[in-house]
Length: 297
Image 1 (cartoon, rainbow, N blue to C red):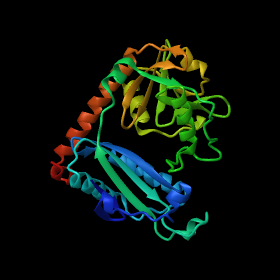
Image 2: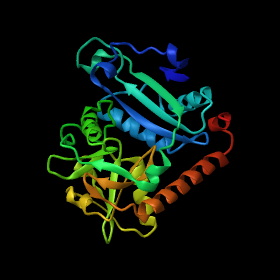
Image 3: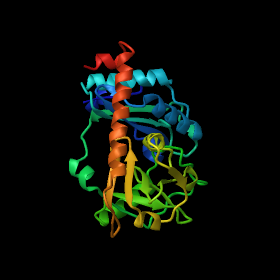
Image 4: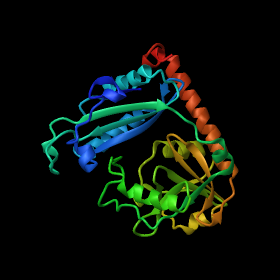
C-alpha cells in the first residue's frame, strides 16, 4: 500500500508522522473523504473547495494548491492500482512544540490515503439501517463552526459510542435547542405526506456534498424539499427516513430508536438518480480526453 506524505508517495510502512504533529496532539487540522469510481474521483473540485474553506476558517494555509492536490490524489490511486476507491485527504497544522499557538507549526502536514472501496452490504440498502438519537448533543455552532470539516471528531465519537451500545448503525444528534442536526458521518432526510425534509444549515450541520446533490436531484424530479428546524418526533413519525454521505450515497433507514420506519420508494428513487449522476460525471470527465485518470487503468 502506498500513501502520500508531504509531496512524496511512500510505502505505508515507510510513512512517518511526528509525535509532535498538532493533528495528533490536538486534532488541529481538516480533512475530506472522497470516492473514486472507475478511476475518476467524484466531485473532486467540490471536495477541494470545501477543504480550502475549512482550512481558511481555522487559519491554516495548505501548502499545495488545488491542482497539485489533484495530481497527488491520482498519484496515490495509480500507485495502488485502484479504480474504485475510498480516498482520505488530511491536512494537519503540522509539527511543532507542545502548545496551542498555531504559529508554533511552521509547515502543515499533508497526507493522502487511498484504499479499495468496499461496498456496504446489499441488505443495508434492502432492509435499511437502525438509527438512534443519543444523549450527546451536537456542538453549538457558535462554539465550533460546523462548516469546518475538522480532525477533532470527539463529539461524533461520543455519539457513536452511544449508538454501538444500542446496537444502532448511526446516531443522529440533536442540538442544544432539541432540533435534529446530523449523524456522526451523515446527513439525514425524512419524508412526510407532502414533502421531503432535512435539517437546515443553521441547525449546526455540515453542508454535505451528497446532501446538496440529493436536494438538487429531488427538486429536479418535482419533489418539494424543505430545509428547516425539526424535533426528534419528526423522524419518529416520518413516512420514510434515509441518510446520505460520500461513501454510502443514499441509505434507507428502517428503525429510529424503537420506532419502525418503512423502507420507502423515495430513497430508492434518489439512490438510482444519484448513481445516474455519478455515471454521467465519470463519462463526462473521460470524454474530455487524456488526463491523470487515464493513467489509472
